[in-house]
Image (cartoon, rainbow, N blue to C red; front, side):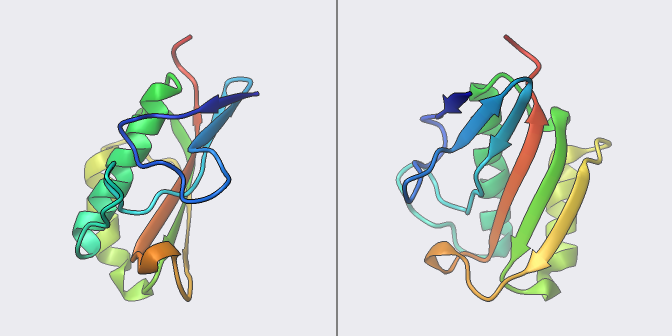
Length: 125
């Protein structure tokens, strides 16, 4: 087991890691739309893009990328944002379509509007 930490993504808000690599798999913690200074982006679209950029940075640190994600879980503060998130998600993933779950939750950390976690395959040693 190896802990993964990227300076290009925000530090964990609590006692957990940005990601952990086990074998050839990378399991990320959920990312919200914080920048590296700890500032939450304004609005759903900006937060969703920041989340995906954060996940990309963490995966790159672990030797992978969004193109090797096998599963995502999206947590939304409002399920009415589903279509907006789908459009942004599609821009980041392109033709790659990992398995996915999307759930609505009552509250996210720092009152974020979206949180995403992923499982990816390591591609670089």
